[in-house]
Structures are given as structure tokens and as C-alpha cells.
Amino acid sequence: MSKAWAEDGNHPPLTFTTSEWKSSADIFPMEYADILERHRVLFGDPPFNGIRVSPSDLRLQVEHQTMGKLLQLRQAVMGAGGDNRLQLEVLEKSLSTLMVVFRGVSRLFGHVPSQDYEELTRSLAQRASFSPDPFVKVIRHMRGAEKIPREDAAGILEGYLAAMERLVAYLNEYKS
Image 1: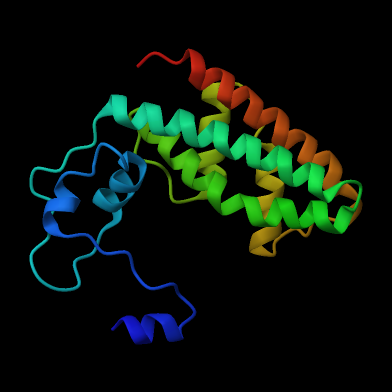
Image 2 (image 1 turned 90 degrees about the vertical axis):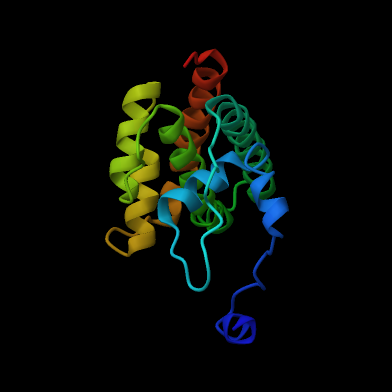
């Protein structure tokens, strides 16, 4: 099974013992929340009985991941400099990881995150008071619906950074 998985271009799967799995919800709350919501058992008994994601663990990881993504985004923007081709690559490569963070934030607010990235982004933007527009443009670009002209990448990156800075500040003050 893992050979076929790898031949399809995927990394080998990460594996846990049952004991490791049951004792790790506190250090991987975002991941566990995703798994608990979206899992599909391929073989055997599901090891989910008794697994619960603590809101305080989720808050800590969400805040950590959001700040980490902001720092990585700033680093990538500096690396791209004024090259709009590289700036567009930063936007394209960052979207999926930011959506993982957005799903975690949505769960922190007690919601089941939308599978539609635009809806997820708009909901979160309204709650945390940032513009969803830069993210929506990249979502549509990645879907092939509305391609971003290279010369627009710098302005969209500016909006990305402003939104992530706002989200970090919001989470820093967030009380559940």
C-alpha cells in the first residue's frame, strides 16, 4: 500500500503506535481535529475512542502556527524581493498551509470549518476584522478561475501580510 502511495508522488505515511496516538492529542490538536472530522478508516478498528481535542491545546497551537506562518511569509516576501514572478510563487505556495491554519482558527471559534476556502476565509475575516480579498484572489487563481497578473502580486502580498498580522493580534487577545 505504501509503495503505491509513494508511486503516486506522496511521501510515505507517518505512523503511530496506538499508545503514541492516544497520548498525542495535546501536541497535535489541529491535526487531530482535522483527522477526527475528516477521517476514513481503511482497515481495522478506528483508534479514536477517548480522543478529545482540548480547546486550550488547540488555542496554543493555532496561535503558534499563525505567528509561525506570518514569520515564514515575511521571510518569503523578503526572499522574493521585487521579482513579481517570485512574489506570485510565494502566494501560490503559501495558500494551502494558510488554509490549514484558518481551519484551526475556525475550530477554535467552535465552528466546523467550511471545506470551501472562500467561505472559510470570509467567515474568519469577518470575525477577526481583516480583508478576505487577498486570499480570495489567490484561491481563485489556484482554482484557475481568475489568474493573478504578475504585476499585481506585490499588492496582494501586502494584503496577505496585513491580514496575517491582524489575525495574529486577534488571536493574541482572544478569550474563548
